[in-house]
Length: 448
Image (cartoon, rainbow, N blue to C red):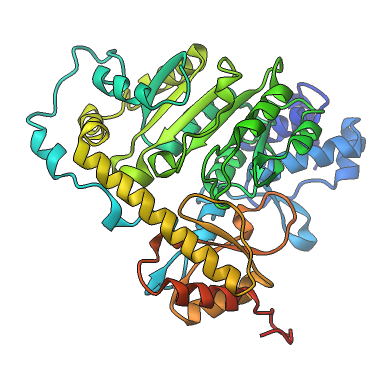
């Protein structure tokens, strides 16, 4: 134990929670301590390093979120084994022991509603060759098509390999260990997994029917925040879309602060209206990301990213060290889908179908006494009496839904997420089954 204390003291650059967390991280990396090794109790370590117990506790919180340490019952706090991948929130939400005849847990679009690729594939004659590996990452014709429907005049624009690729590129280029990042509650599990992997301190801010709550965001901003990540349209899982008035309120709170706003518009062309965006008010502080996975095909792996020139320059630099650019072959396919009248009509029809399915599902739930919020997107966020009991009951009927707890950042009532956009047939019957599951009590409860 004395050797460990000495190793931490030698690596402690500053007497803060972040400094101690970094010292422990370096000790793990240097092999001083390894998986399963027990760490000293908080008060003992605080005394030996002349730190407050609060500082040590906060450092342990940072390390726990990053997956570096874990609690091990009577053994106390130990170094985690990071050699194997952890079961993150996303896997917890979607992984099932068996396949379901009707799987409404996935969040994916209905394959039958994706636009046909026959036209764009027939139009391709060659994969093409860039003039240089340093060419602009966006095809000029695609840039023009993207800007025609972009919600504001962006300082810079790029194309990335899907929404999560864009989020990771921006966050990795900006976030350092221990930085505070505001996210929506409930939020998107892959984003939460990413932030925890980066060692960020995740700060949840609740939503209402208009978007992030300004009062809760103001409270979060009393301590420095590096970034705010939100979904402006058809928020996953709730279906809430931010209003223009709410965007203005949030922008007023963030104006003049060194805070980057990152907007993830994954609903894209399936959203009913042009999204409200903080970029209208804060173009030099906002990154706006628009994915085409839900609307045009997940396997296209394409999203467009706009934002301040300095931020996109950082993203481009990071990409040059790896994949370089998003396939221009796929960009040409997307260009055809965005400009061909027939393809556009197919996407418009899909949007109307999803909207009708969601409206019908929500109406059927309401008839059973189950009220849900939000107004757009493929998913509904259903309150339930008991999450586990609801999942088991629906599984017994061959219906899979996503557990709500991996989406939750703050303590809250139990929910499940249902991808109602995949319900093609028997929509009222499925809604009745979900409503019955929502009322089901936990084991030992009298509720049925």
